[in-house]
Image (cartoon, rainbow, N blue to C red; front, side, top):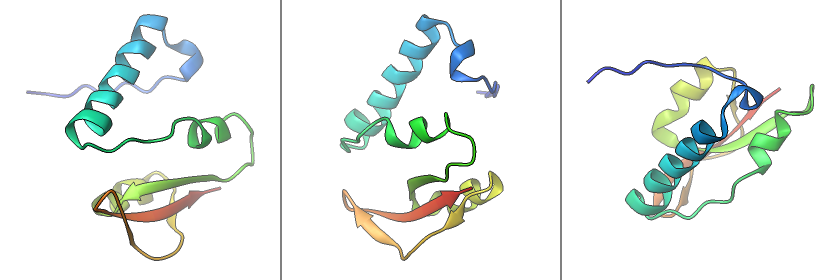
Length: 90
C-alpha cells in the first residue's frame, strides 16, 4: 500500500472530500481508539495569522509535529490512557 500526500487549504476541498476526511477522523479517533475529541479550537486558530496554535499530540508523534514547526509545551500526561504532550506553533 502506498500513500499519496496532498496538502490543500480547507477552502480548496470539495464538500465530499471534507466529509470523507471528517468520517475517517471519527473512525480513527472515536471508534478505533475509543477516544472522543473536541473539534474546532486547533483548526480555528489557523484562520488568524500570528495566532499561536496549541494541540495535544500523542507523545510518540512529537518528532512529527517538531518537523512541522511545533514545540513542546509542558510535561507528558495521559489523555484517555494514551501518553500525550502539549505542543505550540507560532
